[in-house]
Amino acid sequence: MYRFKPELRIPGPVPVPNEVSLQMAKPMINHRGAYFKEHYPKVLARLAPLFGTTNQVHMITGSGTSAMEAAVSNLVSPDTPVLCLVGGFFGNRWAELCKAYGAKLHVLDFPWDSGIDPQKVQAYLQAHPEIELIFMVHNESSTAVLNDVEAVAKARQGHSALLVVDAVSALGGAPCQMDAWGLDVVVSASQKCLMTPPGTAFIVFSPRAREYAQNCQASRYYFDLRLYEKYRENAETPFTPNIHNVFALEEALTMIEAEGLENVFARHRLMRDMMRAGARALGLELLVQDADASPTVTAIKYPDADSFRARIRERYGVEFAGGQGVHANQIFRVGHMGYATPLDVLTALAVLEMDMKKFGQATKAAQLVLEA
Image 1 (cartoon, rainbow, N blue to C red):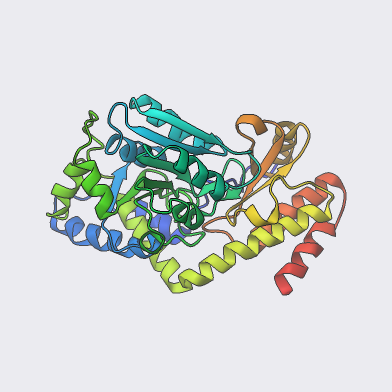
Image 2 (spheres, rainbow, N blue to C red):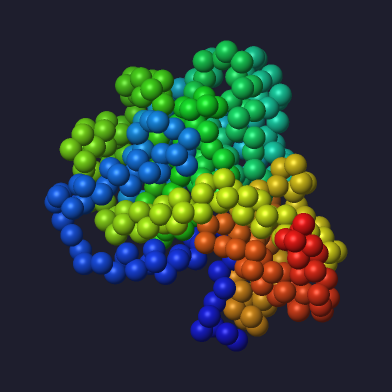
């Protein structure tokens, strides 16, 4: 039923505002021409405040994983000792990428329902002074955990290791202060909180990371950031970019700037709190405790979750995401990021109420949060 109006409530790709979508219908232009070269650097400069940086933002045509691989391929030489902090599916992706590039891999595992413990990171670094790079995820969307990146950065306590952060599902939904927190590399992508179609990824290197990368011996071409830096001097990309996504992002940033970044963060926290209150009112168990809860996605335990998701999609046209890794078919995940409002949370909760025949309980609990 209702396939004519699907409701996408997954942690990316997210719904795209009409104003942003319309940018994708513009006539094709020359990516080496004056119009694109005028807009491209300005758009990326407007993206920098979301990273909390004065460093240069580079764009790669690809998914968020392309920016992750760009980070690894520009930093990890064969046998480089690296530490991957794994507490979910995407933390594990860092480990897989580092392994693919021949790193001497160290993995510090954390439960897939709680945040990274900075004290354990500190202890591991003290025991392994040889570690040169640390890889972690800011918002682990597979588990709905928001990790304390600032605390992990501080846990280095003079250790020289560079910190590389996947902020794909956090950027624009939670604060990121790359420069103030001392982060060395941050990557993200267009299709999450930035409200833009998939197809572009972003990467920022600190001066220390750029200097470190000069000695990297990994084979690379498409992801070689030296090429991106060279072409950026002429306001170009080394390869054909996703042209229309640049203009879509330009429109999305206009919307974000009009709302105000702090208000955007507050809206995401509000939607998180509404979703969690509503789920609890239905007697459902949340995967993550409040202290670690993501503002962009909520994970809810549910037996045979995949059958439930299929039923909801078929009956109401509402799409929830499933669990990944150890949580496959054990949870469902509700995305509330980017182009989403408290009304979207109420819609998601109303569907749960109807399916569970507990009418009004979840939406009332969420309304109390909204009106508090």
